Image 1 (cartoon, one colour):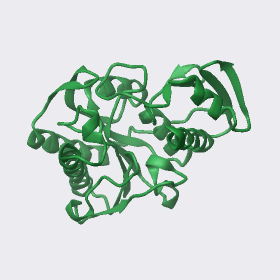
Image 2 (cartoon, rainbow, N blue to C red; image 1 turned 60 degrees about the vertical axis):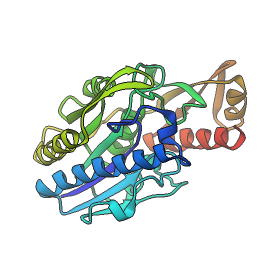
Image 3 (cartoon, rainbow, N blue to C red; image 1 turned 120 degrees about the vertical axis):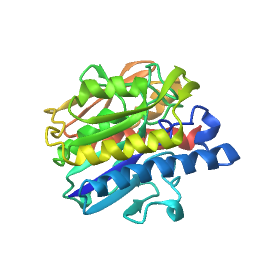
Image 4 (cartoon, one colour; image 1 turned 60 degrees about the horizontal axis):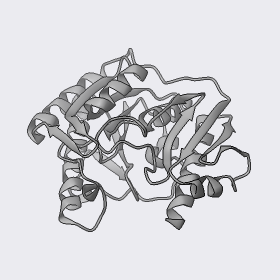
Length: 272
């Protein structure tokens, strides 16, 4: 069995401050090590459960956070951006038998540690067919287009509640409890890694998981933090202005959703 792991940093135990998510400080260096070690626990569990190949797609920031020299030797690393499949780099190199979402977080507009969707500086909320969604949904939907089920998810308790509603049969590991957007009660690293390894091993034998399948087309609404961002995004062909800080586009496939939102994010980052 082949497993693809998508890893973010905000949902890692011990991470609760924006400084920990941005390069240039000792706090970030510590956070990326914690991230790498939680990923390693998931890799170990996948291998324990019979995985024959594991790829890890670094999915935070510039996609260059995981320490290759510290990564489990049983996994390959996908890093760097831009790339077509965003946080799911390598998805097109399938077939894959499952997707693990490690270190994920709650959606923009919700309560959770460092909650956002794709780009917190630009997107205030993203809706698909009228429903607010987070990265755990968008990436699971993209994986579903390629027939890949989400088998394991980890993050804070708010992410766990959101994800359970979308993936009722997936293994979910809660690594910390949100006390605010920048405060949490963290489980010790050893406890978290043991739980992740056990859940990953169990996920390998969980055949109740099915690819997330939602029929298109998709009406995607993007609410922006600044009116200027909406001005910028409306330069993209196919967009319709809904309000000063909201626009909409129609996507035929989840892949189109991902490409468009990642393009918006890059546009905003270029002028912030």
